[in-house]
Image (cartoon, rainbow, N blue to C red; front, top):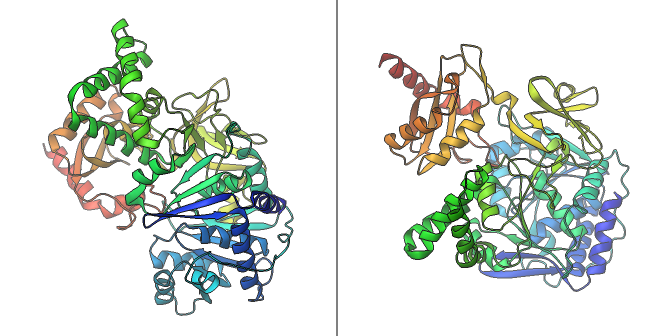
Length: 552
């Protein structure tokens, strides 16, 4: 595809300048534009020797690294369809995806990942390790003759198959073609203001196998930004500070943790800084509720001079222009919190089926709680039940080998997102919830659980997740995970219920010490709740919760 050739041209132009860095085991490994191209050439020569036909699938199973990037670019350049897989996912689930798309080759980052496949799939296709391509020393001293321009791609030719999270049912393979990717990179590469001081630094920790993360990777290469890759989540805060990025792609859960960490650290430190911070935070939110006072301005001015700059520097370094947030709706209070600190949070909204993005915040006009206007060249509107439907050159052509599922998702040229939304007069969108997550009470009331869950989670100290139940019941109940006290949950319910209509009141709860996680199978690969499975796994607890409440 032409955009891949454009990336190669930019890497060639970068020469000896670093375009990617990975932080691994306490040291930083860099690859210049020239070095990354040499790695791509070596990989292309290795793949070409396998004599695979254009359009065959090649699975890519590895953690983020410079090698992953070289593999991805090389597979596409050879005219193969890359199938990126999540390295933390259960081997049995990975095998199910590969059986669905029938790859001719599986490229594994290490032997443990390869062994997980072979142990669960006796008839697995050939597997190669990254070391087989690059050698144990990594990308150092890699030499290969230039492989030439990438294989040309017609806009309709499939480039990748990315498997969806599978919150209900098996994961589906989303086919994205060259036209989808070209249109998306045309939008993302012109989205952010040009850095007048030179190369932007982009910090990255989200797995490249996710559509939004992959689009950010390709955009960074196309713009010759410096992409700094975290490889150890336990070192994320320190790596983030040392990277001193201009931009940082993240998800709402991380921003929530960052916010709570600041509160906890200041609470432990105490003193004047805590007093100023606490008063200023209250003042800031009162201001946005249009009930501020003159003293509120005093506290905010003090904090802007004495407290907020220190928080920004310790949190993310001195260069940050914006945090970029996607994957799920961001709580309005969290976005306002970062705005209070002087940190811009730009939201994007989209799905894998839309090549990751449908809307992007205008960097010059951010409205907290909304995800921006539709990107150039696409149409968005509301369908039945306030469902967002989209059409345009970013929309996928279909699911791999699933014509019935494709026909259900694509109707009259419009993609049914399954998300509920609203749009203001300026074309700025807000995401309300998921259609399939709607809880329908016995009374017939339809309730989107996400807003209520978010409000409860904010108010319950130590809570990891809140999930509402109530389909076919007389009222809502809540499952709360984490080490929390019953009185704290009840207090939160009392506070939230008072502002809700009677049919949205949450009247019972159950506490589970074990949080929902990827490891116990109750979160998807990108951290979304598997609601149907949670309801099934906790069927006894839910039944008991309603029986006890009715008996009381």
